[in-house]
Image (cartoon, rainbow, N blue to C red):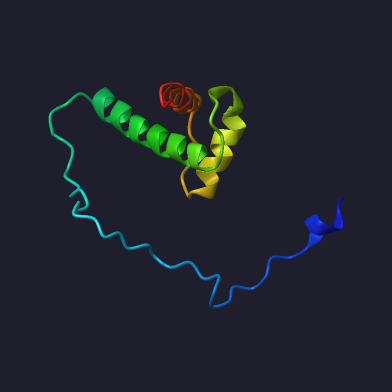
Length: 104
């Protein structure tokens, strides 16, 4: 293994500490509302799966994975772990690749 790969990360200093980004935008954040009542259970499952797949697709695109062929299940599950999400199912991984296909 190269010696450069064995270096430890530097301790955070005043210049490397992450700060929240404040946007000067006239757009206000969207207010979360409860999901509509009375729908079949499958609707709620699909809705939440789509939201999770969209978050994962955005995270993958931000990390430099642009092609659906690059996004294997292991890659998608690793990204989910990085962003603090439970590992997605095979169906959700398939949906992530579908979102990436249509993001071009």
